[in-house]
Image (cartoon, rainbow, N blue to C red; front, top):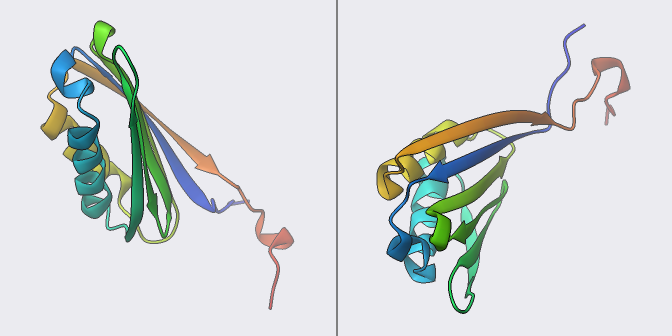
Length: 124
């Protein structure tokens, strides 16, 4: 029996990123917005916060859910979430972020969220 997912959640880890880039909340926001657009998402808004002495968190709200990044410049590390539904291309968002941040290495995990059994779907 085939199950349909309501959304796709991609977890992206970036290692070996330039620390100054990971500490620039505005540049991180611009990168996430570009990734959202590459993934064919409709950007609704963004919020970023820079921590002291270092690090940042950014969330981009899209019609299809959200993208977020949390950074640890002292380790050259960033954790990224891309959660989308509908006819999006989250893999294109991942590619955009890898191109922009040029990590020495990266890893991804893709999780099907909200698996719905066909027999349990609501019919209008």
